[in-house]
Amino acid sequence: MRTLIIDTDTASDDAVALIMALRAPDVRVAAITVVSGNVGLDQATRNALYVTDLCGQSIPVYAGAAHPLNRVMESAQWFHGQDGLGDVGYPAPTRAPEPIHAVEALIAHIRANPGCLLVTLGPLTNVALALAQAPEIARLVDRCVVMGGAAATTGNVTPAAEYNIWVDPEAADIVLRSGLPVELVGWELCRDSANILEDEMAAIRAFDTELGHFALDCNRRAIQANFEQSGDIGLALPDPVAMAIALDPTICVQMSRHAVAVELAGTYTRGMTVVDRLGVGGDARNRATWAPHLEGRVQVCWSIDIARWKTALYTALR
Image (tube, rainbow, N blue to C red; front, top):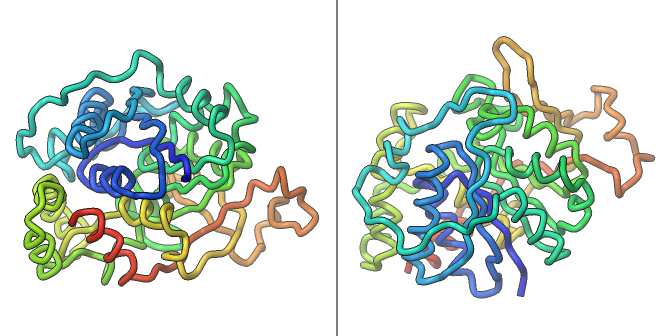
């Protein structure tokens, strides 16, 4: 049984990713830590608690950073709805968050569960703060799957950057250089044929399960926003794609390890994930002699098995 810790800015696609984790038979979700991002911290925490209620589980939920390290907070409510869950009007959760700060909780749970799987679905502020306080936890994590970035492709909040990295690029740069065994799952992997199309949404409706209806209803605004933003038809689910890879690494069919930097000061490229795929940047992390325990390189996922990703989603929602 694998131990899973999730850091999230819970909105509509995060909610589906949480369902996938909470319904996976071979993992134990030890903690859910929440960061401000898609929506404000209080709303994101409320949403995480509501999803645990929906799944009938009492996983501890911890509220964390309410704003980026050095930036003004800029939410994505236009994409997910004012409440992050499509403004359906879901009831209040039955539980309150734990009284411990998410950063403290991350450190404690990682220390208590060496070899754990860490999955991040939002800005990396909580994780960066935890690493600043306890850098040794980087070596205690077996895998750190990060939904973030746009590896050598188009961004979704600027031409160069994906939202999670753009919101707090300083935090992302800290995490990617920390020595955590990061697997970067970029926004681009949920696009094109990875989108959930109309007939596939109809198939999910036909399951006639509470979770299946919720997954589509809470994303009703996101379906519209996906077309407005990208011209893509259907429902894009970046966080569930990342969760699918976390739960089943073989869903990523092409991955390679590189030095990855985050642009912090570019006029047009703030938050860009710069992948040195050919090793031409002179970064020490691309040298063969670089110490493995200090490697600091990132596994970048370049493509996924679309059919297996969608099967993983359907299995969680049936």
